[in-house]
Image (cartoon, rainbow, N blue to C red; front, side, top):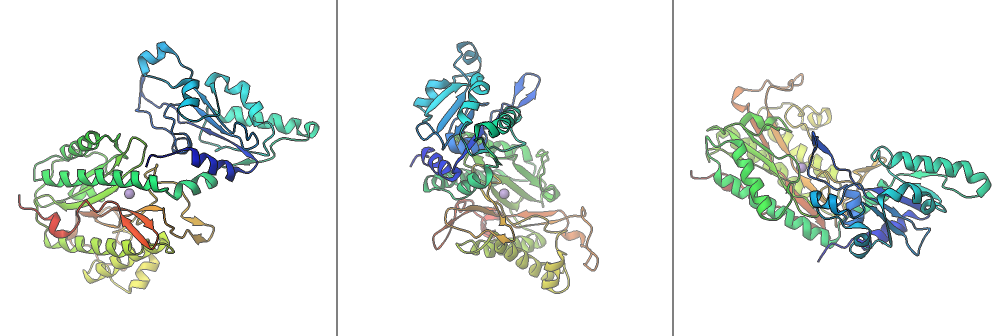
Length: 438
Ligand SMILES: [Mn+2]
């Protein structure tokens, strides 16, 4: 079931009403000197076009029903293409990407006013696209100047996000297929990583194994900077060094997922003992995080909210931390005051899709968004015991035997009619699977 961008364009055009949308592609980003980062397309632009070149601009023009989808793209240029690879050019934009009309990018300034003439409003994300924004604002200013005599002109600037991100939040069946594949490849890499770990192996070697599998399976590589964090390094939530030797007696936390050729992402975290055996303290906290994760996963179903998922995880964690003597007081009071946040300081999940932290509202005004079939989210509670944050007043000091334990367990979950599907189940997490004979 291939991804089809055309039905999305139809939905977006309908949602626009009388507004005309200008959706720019991402630009190439400089790494250093004349070297660029690998190109990453803007996810909104990709969602609507599937076109993977930098600098392009897509127009969506409901007021021109005979040719509502116009692409401005880099023109064919044999000399540039010898260095940088093939471009589709205007002919490819029409033939391969379904544009009703296509023009070379250098005609954008000249042609944009004509295309936007007659729209009731302009739909453009201010603050994100410095190559297009001045042009668009000047054009709108001209329209406003002329409106009294012409009797027409756009009178509002709209953000595309509410329309577009509501579409992106609800995944089509073909998108769920891609997310299943991203989850599967990511899970395979976690299994390979666990099999190679033993004391003395470097975090970087584990990371290389994971990246090797992602590339060998045809994905683009890491969906986000992966975290391979032994022992206390796991208590740094966005640990980036990833280059320490793994120590006997420590846990290893791995947060890694792949990004497919069409940018659908996996996002998995697993934690297990470097030497194959949990200590008593490690096992107690692992069992607690797993219990919180399973309870939170059970809350993922249509009609519930992401807040319920988070609240469930927090409650299980706080109850367990009280039993272990790491917190004291009434569970309700501790939850209300947030007196657990020196041990659990992040939310329990996020939307997942073309962006790893995918677009879509979590709240609309006062109301948390209700989970619906097609929504995909991560469920990732954790505990991080270190000296970095102060123990809140009235809470027990932390005994040294707990310190340096960082645990997170993260799965990707699709909401389905009547329930949910854990996409990442192939990455094992039962304590018995985390313990290994070395
Ligand atoms: Mn995540």
